[in-house]
Image 1 (cartoon, one colour):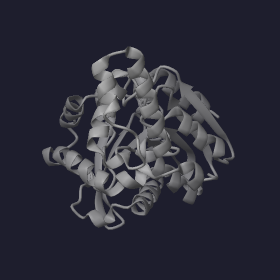
Image 2 (cartoon, one colour):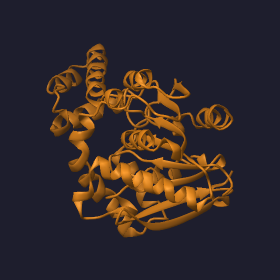
Image 3 (cartoon, helix red, strand yellow):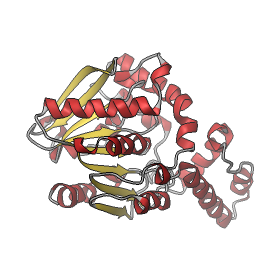
Length: 316
């Protein structure tokens, strides 16, 4: 299906006192509605979805919402950048979509950081949601990062490359890893080298710039504000994300839950996603492993991802 045949609209609304932006993409407004809660923190998903021609709109009327503080929803007021505020915003956007499309409920898909915001929103107001879909699901982010460092260290040492070994030995995991720039730079380098980052083939900053600046639905200022928002969001949420353990914070979600996880994901590890899933009580829940994916199975194994959504989520 050609992207140009889709209906794509851009909307702004005031959500809990702040102007925020949505991009809605569909082939038919009668389709079930899916709210996408992006990761980052502070990095909208629509530019990446658009650049990779992800076809979620074949199955849903999809709402890509830029969270408070980034892109279309940029604000210089950092006081509103709290987890509770973003959870409340998620609930309000969901209510808006229910009214806008005359639905009883919507589906919610959280990705990465968005699994924290999304799962909390669904656990608080389950009656608004047909199902929760977690992709790149967070369990304990600190434990995930420790797994990542150990995985990378083993790979580097097995390579017997003295330069690599020296480099990885120059940093170490600690509980304050999130404030160590050298640690992040080196670990990210090897995470990408070993096919366990955002995409198995890597996703360099230059590609991120290209994807955002190629998004014609954004104004030039909104494109700039994506990157301004990332910096602000990390300052606001970096420590909170590192210290989050959803497996202990959320024990029950009273709607259906589906976790879609890449086997090779070492941004939010497969083991921690499974731990979250195992600890969770829900009316119905399923966990799907994508054997050839890292953090973005909706890109890396799109056909299988859409097939699972159609047959396991929508038709269940």
